[in-house]
Length: 115
Image 1 (tube, one colour):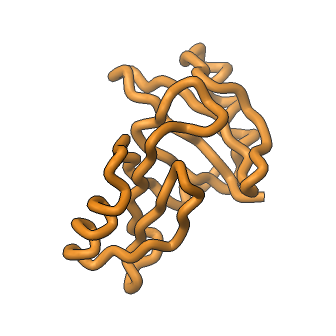
Image 2 (cartoon, rainbow, N blue to C red; image 1 turned 30 degrees about the horizontal axis):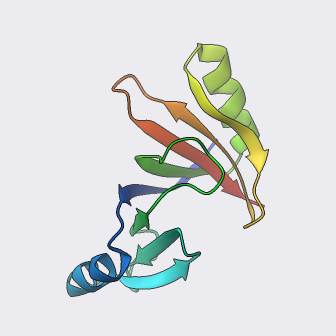
């Protein structure tokens, strides 16, 4: 399994202000679904920050996202380890397959692959 991208997720109701602030650091908006916005560096597109008001289909807002090349393999490894699955593996309408797991520090990690 290969990690493609790691992105912190900031829970916020201040999307516009966040876009402006991170714009000062060189980030540009690359996606806005209304409840989550992704900002990325034009020169290093995998350098990203997510700003989320709430997760649309999950019971909690994740603290970070990890994109992998094989989310099913990641899910099997995490499940078999006994880690707490917070949100089950499922396909989402915006083109990702994902699940949430709680890390040993209590942080929720959104693990995903694009379909």
